[in-house]
Amino acid sequence: MGMLSDLRRLLSYEMTLAEWLGTAVLLVTPHLVLGVVYAVLQPGYITSVDGAERVAAAVGTVVFWPVLLIAELCP
Image (cartoon, rainbow, N blue to C red; front, side):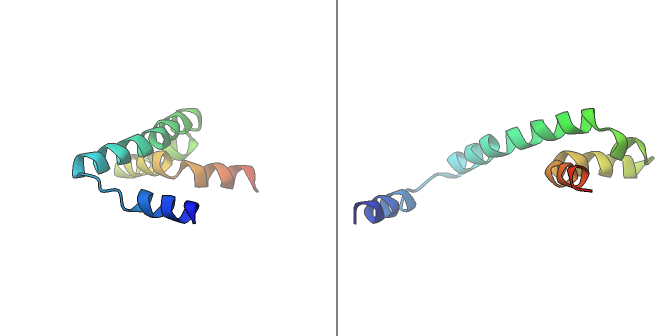
């Protein structure tokens, strides 16, 4: 029962809005940094389009880099 009580204590912890936002920033930052690195190293998705589509392709590459990486590795 010790593990169950520890889980209840963990799940009953209350956080303020600032703590939630800080946690979200800490969790999202590495993903976005790796996305920017992937976009710089694999610019093919971005350079193949023009105009507003280029912005959408850049954002899509930064956000969805894991999917693009898997698609590239698994033909």
